Length: 330
Image 1 (tube, rainbow, N blue to C red):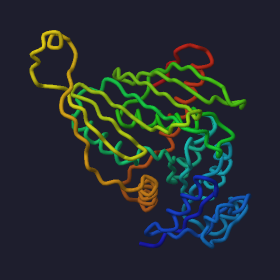
Image 2 (cartoon, one colour; image 1 turned 90 degrees about the vertical axis):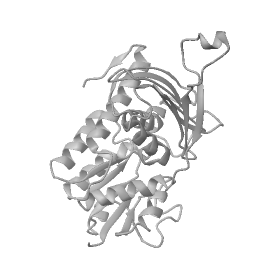
Image 3 (cartoon, helix red, strand yellow; image 1 turned 120 degrees about the vertical axis):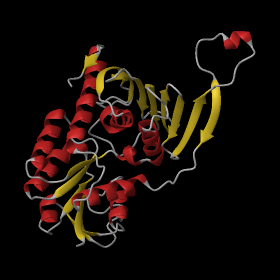
């Protein structure tokens, strides 16, 4: 199969990691990169550094990865779609729902492969948990709780914590449960003097009744990335910083202590920490997109799915601003 010619737009904090992976991805040649600010981090590896996406298109790339600020996704993506270039855009897909829909239409109407870089889908702990859930390991999913906290990322200027960080949790929650969000409520805080929110506490409900809770902020000196999935038979705890997956089973041993035995809930059972392979999520994401461009069956985050994530994120912001529960259309 012919080598795919790839391009990259953006050489910032995420862009330099994309450059590293693209530069060593089997079946792909990273032809050139584009960033009007140049190659500050020395990530281009001697490849030509261009200023515009139009210059990159002129190099004859087959596909492109866009790691530019969110506010530029639509403009850059539409240029690439018009040029017939398959594209993966970093998350979120666009700054607002209207822009996300225009991008999905632009790529879909031309039969191009478009994807969104929601990297948590490729985290080994979440991938294993999802597969085991699909096999019925937890039974009915009752609740999904996520915590995503840490220091402020200096790379962010044009969106708040909801569209930058909470979109990870919106996507992974719906993806793991294989159910869309039905409604959300939220409380936000503004602490850094910026126009955007710095902290959000979200509660939600998925189709089928699963209750969700998401605590997200970039005001904490402690970095935490945890997903707890509770079902009928037990709970999975996924630490996506370390890609560890732990299973807490409901207890099955009879209790002799009357006060405990009479409690109408679950008891503690066996605890298993799974030994799983831990490939780099970013590389797995790139491999999936490369395969999709090659016409192979591949699990990518489609642009249509990306639109839905932006819809939920905007519903969260609406709920925080209004103090009301916001219901999402099917």
